[in-house]
Length: 520
Image (cartoon, rainbow, N blue to C red; front, top):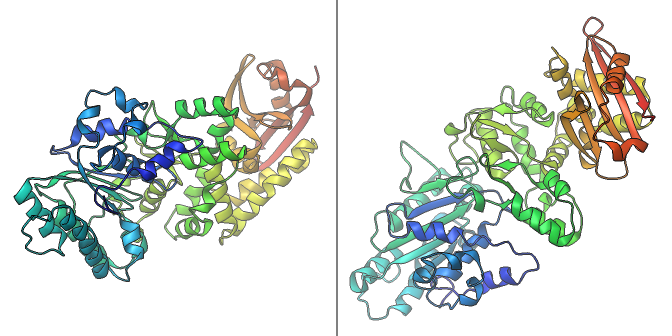
């Protein structure tokens, strides 16, 4: 047993001992299926806080020969699989935390040297009877062990992409690193499995990828392990019942990463922190700063700022994710920026439509804070006015509400009006600060039709029905709410319900608003 070769199961034991643990052990069923096959190389990239290191620790605990991990896995789902015993603690495992190696060395040459010496030293101790050509070069040590003993190895690699995040402008260092990984893994008989995790997919340079033998699994291409890319809605719903927390609130804050039609995942760390703290808030800041997001949204690509405003207004934006070069510097268009934000977890991605969107309240708050600290003066002012708009709505001050909505529209003129549906996007943007207190439902089924926008409170706030009109008048909107009984389905809010009618006049280019308290 060593730091790198056949490490013990201590880290995974800590995860199992935690107050909140979600069984993701069926990931092992997938990795078992690719051992010693042509698919034995896999790279899984997903955002920070999404459980990458925990999964790596689980795989080490399951495969490592120096462990007896029955007590950790016998009650997990993997124990019911046919090949459970076949691979449990039956493999030599080499664990490589690349961030640790990178932190200990000043440059890429020293980092590679440190990897070679550190892991080779443990291998030579474990296999002392092998005749080694070079005891300080990992490639030679592994080759000699295989030639002498036909021993094979599983490589578990965490933070594989740290070089591309730490040496963002050092292309020579990046290429040396990729070529080194190719040397020790590609086509080598001593490899049974390589499982890599990181934030970024594998970097391409020149006309080829140095690691083109890897299957890449990411937030853009999550098959076939969508259920293991985060906490699923079903898993979180069970946790919420167990800890007496609101599942709807949990979804509003941390859900939205829809990976296919059946699977949507939530940020594991945020869910766990929320349950332990008994609070719903932004847990993003401890791992990703507002400044890091600000760098990308301030990039001066044509249309990038406009598209971010559309995203904040709950619109979706089509991107081409295929040209992204899998690094944090090679940006040729806004599509590259948006694709990076998908990998970082700031955007969700719908593969069917090639659209990106802001997934949840936690991420919305990150965007708002970044914009407020940027040079987006008009947009920043509009977002700040959103709180004043809410207070004016509560006060039933229709004239003031109309002014704030008009200001939001003028300051974000890319949201062009041509019908009531287009007006709805401005309403979403104008009321963006309501996201913490409300679930906003578009086309709410109620009474004799569908209310345009309904604000359902999560706390002690008034519910609101907003009916939109284009080139008519606000009184007509109020009349429609009453005649079509849009308050059906909102019975428990009738003692604190606001009816809001908003109209946009095409000729005068002015908004008008009428607000009434519901009276039975």
